[in-house]
Image (cartoon, rainbow, N blue to C red; front, side):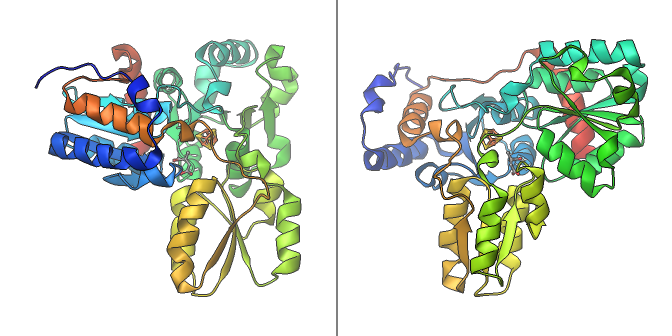
Length: 364
Ligand code: CIZ
Ligand code: SF4
């Protein structure tokens, strides 16, 4: 392959429509050497180019199975890391824009989790009594932390099963970074409010007393997704007033009150499957990212299903949206020219331990 450096600045001014042709042409040149994965939250003009789509669990499984030399991941940083960890040595993972992160994942860092573990270790025997459980929305070094400390990874599709795995081994769980997914899952498992404590990572001992720590079965990291906090109980009440026959479905990253008021709560895959399986002519209010809601709204309109976004505000995941047609066109043309740009490579030691925690999840 000839090598020619293509600078992104040559792409930044391209119109979205012009990118589509260049993306298709570069994909044609790459053929089966590249596979394009897109998360449900990706914008329509990126999503339409994907070979494989799904939530992060499904995409991580697919990444492990694909044979392609290059995995182009249209999603956010932690997802590309998972693809790198689960794919083979000869495969390369690229993220079209390295600034595509996850603000929730950034709320937990290895330094803060290690400090929490140390502080918990002053009150109890952390490695005997606590299973660290990280939501897949977290950096690879936190997954590696879980791998090293008998812990595991979960997604919004399997959080309850994974917590059951943890509680079968140790009496407590430290769940990071999303307090809302952790709290909702604990509640559905019958864990009482008095057994749930929030670990405020900016305060000594998480802002808890020793007796609160001893009593807690679930210790919830004080992180959240700002996109899903835009959905409020009043949006559901208004919808119920106007459409008493309608259904409400929310993502477990929403606050507890929103989940409580919803008819159904689950991951993006669950949301899509539930609405797909519903009778024709039903009406839905959906509390998750806008691109996904707009896509299913279009997809299910021919069946007479009315699918509406829960918030009156336009709230997209701005970091997901960094993967735009310009970056995708640049990345694919560079690859077609033999130049790998924006490679995501997790350092070997972290990758090995993170893989342990991911494989515990995938095996369960
Ligand atoms: O796990 C994922 O892909 C995320 C971030 C959301 C969901 O529920 O699918
Ligand atoms: Fe992260 Fe929230 Fe965006 Fe999901 S929607 S990637 S949790 S910031």
